[in-house]
Amino acid sequence: MSNSTMIEGDDIALFQLMALESSLLLETKGLKFSRGLSVYALIKKRYGFKGNKIRVLEQFNTMLNALRVERGLPEKALQHT
Image (cartoon, rainbow, N blue to C red; front, side):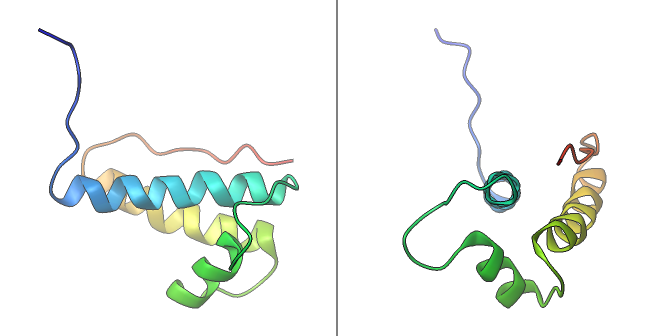
């Protein structure tokens, strides 16, 4: 028997958002996610956020923290430089 966790239902969408947040954080540090549309552009387009990468990351983090609290998870503080 293994000690693994299964992600299912609404948690899949939350996990995808958390992956986008992590990818955007890496983009603010200079790493590129893919050859196509950047995560920054994708998030701006999908959620209508305005501003530079740091500002969009802050707005996205605020939105995601509200979802985390809704599900009883701890908020995540941004640690960008």
